[in-house]
Image (cartoon, rainbow, N blue to C red; front, side):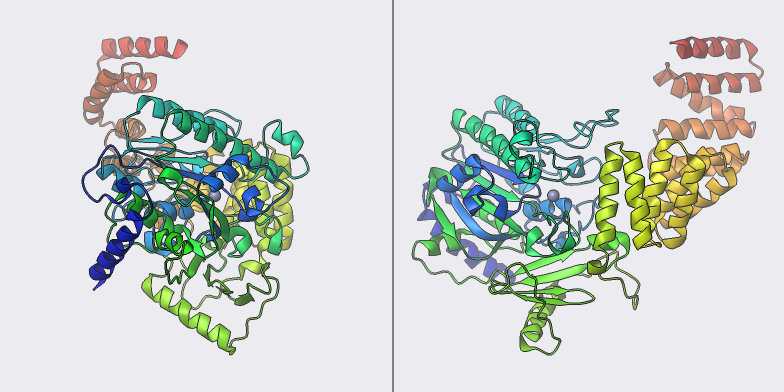
Length: 633
Ligand SMILES: [Zn+2]
């Protein structure tokens, strides 16, 4: 049945589109030069009510305002997730977080979910993405997000930069500059270009003159700065002659708490402060320019809209609906819209707190939590008066609707053990704010401030594994390994199921020379997560220190099964073989290694030991000299 529904839905909207503007819109055939370019701009952490054209008076956002005047502005747009990665993947796949499964950083996007870039690329589009933060880097924290992009502007690997800029974050101006450079070299369209501006995300540090002009409200200063980057990008597109026929979408991935409900930033809660985002859609030829649509819409509605506007066939599963019927309805046509928002956050699970789910209709919101919440959004838009009563008819009907949504999706993968009651994030927000501040201070090398925040967090919640973990990481970075081990040991006791806690404990113990302790920690980390390459290699080295060459050999061999060319694994294995006087086995691989990498002094030193073991004194001497010469450089 489902294909039939989708078929009629596509046909229905296709008919609608042809009435909207340029005939090129609704093509479903092979790519044509006239297919519209698609420019997606996501502005991180952007609250709708902090944008000029959304009625906010304390910020200047001329570029967004002008785009809204040329396009359609959705006043009631909402994100399904208050977390950057999860939300962006929802935007790019049109799927709910629990459907695409990327509910935390570092979780790979399954290849079974097609992204906008993949779908448009198949249709002949040139595709590129320009990100403003390392949390969207597809090599590290957002694996799979680069799928379908011809070019994905990741961050440099192994940046030695101590500053946040360039290592963790790029200013909007730089992101746009990269996009323009790429575009200059790829003039032939159609294009799908995604530009991500991270600036409004905390810490709020806009560059001058915004830092001065907005010194008392720096979050707005970041928004004004991001708007100036949008202005540059739009000016570039106009100059390139592609603006008029392009589809341009601007939205936010989530908002910002700014202290509402005690939340300073975002991620933990599902209130409108972090779910209400701006959404502006400029269509080819600026059809319906200046229209304002007040119906509730969602970020899952973005991809179906792009697909219809470009004539690209939709994948079998999409959780949203095109926005075009609403645009049509706005000019008199009929549209029956029931776009309830299913909001999700598993972010609290990171700290061992309960995940939250919300159902938002135009008038009511139910938040499912250990202490549930129900709000009348008309009378109480700030969600201050919890009306939840288990037997009230409103709560019952919202719960029934919520159950229908949830029945469609699997439960969160890393949820708690059955029967375990997790704390309500509402009771933990002060701790989370402190942990977040400590993390930012740590990123900025302000370690004594970070320590103070963590100590304060531990005063409120003396059994917070995350606070102990962060303290351990601070001491690791500061080189105080035995103190780091004390904190990380506590984190492991409180959270024995966390493989990263145990890995970091192993690291701290290895660095402080406690080999047996390091061995035990790394063994238990690998029992929890066997595919960790760095833990495996480190454990191999620990066994070498313990003169347990047989076990060292096993660890390096296991690492090489995953990555046969891993240099550290190959050299570790050779060392283990040398310890066992198995010189013949070590010889073959070390000779091959030094042939392909003749400047590796450590490999040459090992090879010299092998020659000595085999009684080839002359070869050993020659190889030692080569190593010595390289070490001197
Ligand atoms: Zn974000």
